[in-house]
Structures are given as structure tokens and as C-alpha cells.
Amino acid sequence: MRLTGKVAVVTGGASGIGAGIVRRFVAEGAHVAIADISAGPAAALATELGAGACALEVDVSNAGSVAALAAQVARDLGPVDILVNNAGIGHVPQPLEELADAEFERVLAVNVRSVYLTARSFVPAMKARRSGAILNIASTAGVSPRPRLTWYNASKGWVITATRSMAVELAPFGIRVNAINPVASETPLLATFMGQDTPEIRAKFLATIPLGRFATPADMANAATYLCSEEASMVTGVALEVDGGRCI
Image 1 (cartoon, rainbow, N blue to C red):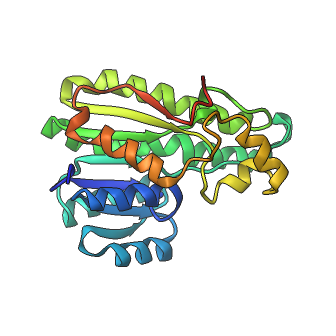
Image 2: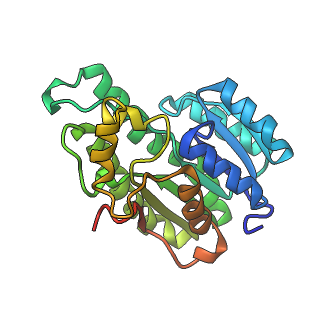
């Protein structure tokens, strides 16, 4: 029960890595707001988890929606101790010059702009309380890019740099900011990154992971729980690779 009494917000919390983090945070005693654009799955997960979770609809790329989320969490759950910026999207592998303008803008809006918007809405209260933990979900793509995923890679590289800069700026206020860099994981995004889900393509991806398996939401939840708990009270500005050795 390492997060007993903590209030946490997890964006993109209804599925994949986000849902894994939500489940683990609730098991560790936190009260978790599952903030997701998919209201139905978020509500279903909240019902499954009981009193420790609630579902709130949000578009993390929209300033008004994020501000409304922050206000509702403050009203319903109280001051936020933990913010997990997990919401993210990818694009199918393709030559960098062929990605459509609208898709490029959407990747930046969800992967990059969302971190800026949640900071604007949640950091002031954390500063006032002089405490808080922020966790950004980046990617090994931001450290060791795969070809034909250039603009996704770049968005996650931005998240890593933003994490380090936020950590330095917010440290005097008692706010820690870290990131985790997942390797390809068994989530709904996996097929997007692979282009198509075939045994041959899976084998190609797995050949780049020394431990020989894809990551799971539980793997990410374990790392997230540590980084957001008091056990990591001296850890800030870290982008932790949870990647089975891929970035070595």
C-alpha cells in the first residue's frame, strides 16, 4: 500500500499501459481518476475497480477540456498528488515525408501538447502545496529510434527533454518529474507500430529486445509505482528504460 491516501490522475487510463497503471495504483491504496477520451471503457474500468477509481472524460489535446478535468478532480477527489501523462498515439510505419499533415498534427497534439496543457492545469496547485509527482510516459523510440516512425520518435524525444527540464525547474517546489521509456508492449498500439501484426513482423521486433519478449502493462505499472512513491523521493529527471535491454 505504497500510495495510500494519494490522489492520482492517469490520462489515457482506460486501456493499455494506462489501465495497467490505474489497476496497480488502486491496489497500492491510491484514489485514481481514469481520465480518457473513451468514456465507456473508462467507466467500465472504474466499475471493475470500485471505490478506488472514477472515470472522467477528457480530450488531452484541448485546453478547455484539460482545465475542466483539473477542476473536477480538485472538487471531487481533492488535491492531486500524482499526475501520469500516459495518453499517446502513434502512426503506422511510413516514409517520413509521406505522413499526412493532419496525422502529424494529431501526434503532436496528443503526445506533446497534452503534457504542456496538464502542466498548466495541475502544476500551480502542486507548487502551492510544495509537493507532487509527475510521470510522463515516453518511449524507447525517443532514445533509439526505429525507421519509418520518425514523427512519433520525435514526439517521444520531446517528452524526454521536457521531463528533464520540468524536473530542474520544479525541484525547488518539491515536485518530482520522471518518465518511463517502454519498449514495444502488448497494447492496442502495438499493431500500429508494426504496420501489421504477423508472426514475421513480431519476430523482427522481438529480435531487437535482448530479454526476448514484449513488455506488458504490468511491467510499466511496476516502474510507475516506484517512481511515484516515496521510495523514489530522491529520484527526479530520470527517463527509465523499461525495455528488456533494447536500448543497450
